[in-house]
Amino acid sequence: MRTRVRAGDPSAFAELFDSYSRAVYNHAYRLTADWSTAEDIMAATFLEAWRLRGRVDPEGGSLRPWLLGIAGNIARNQYRSNRRYRAAVKAAAAAETSVADHADEVAARVDDRRKIEAALAALAALRAPEREVVALCLGEGLDYEAAAEALGIPTGTVASRLSRARKKLRALVGGGSKAQRPSGTTRKKASGKREGATPGRQTRGDHHMTTRPAQEGNR
Image 1 (cartoon, rainbow, N blue to C red):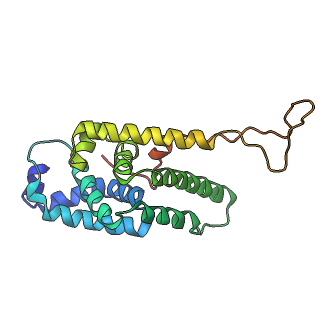
Image 2 (cartoon, one colour; image 1 turned 45 degrees about the horizontal axis):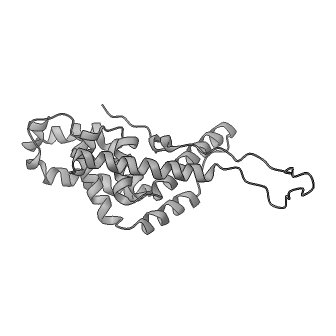
Image 3 (tube, rainbow, N blue to C red; image 1 turned 135 degrees about the horizontal axis):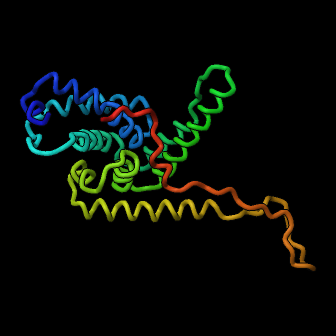
């Protein structure tokens, strides 16, 4: 496949698109929180891959890390600040979803949407370099070596960024899962007992990063 891609074989690029377009699209969505932008990035990624085909190493395995790296570079140029990313997350959360009036389908759509929104909100709490590593390693399931290839950085840097991201996500989850006293409740001074205290809702951890915006069909 790599030799055919380097040679500019159109059928090789067609296979590449069929195999990895969904992965590129989902990865772009995690990095932008915008469906339309993700679609544009996916298209731009394969155009850029064609332009850069001569740089593909003839030896190696899957070209998925290479494509995800190209997508990450394009997304990075569009979303250079966390402020813009957080704005996109808020817009995604506020967007209305049109579904048929069937209770089971509506419930499933709402549940999926909440999971996606939770994953995006967690990603928004990270710096862009950490978000990229999380999207690759936890979202796409790449190992450190493949993620390093995609980002063009040392494997050790991938490990350290992912470690920092995990710590931030754990701190975020820990801060949101503490029990809180409902408004209007008070303590009894005489007995020292608490009234109306209810346990806080447990928040899921960074395994939300594995939530896929859509079903992937990768090989």
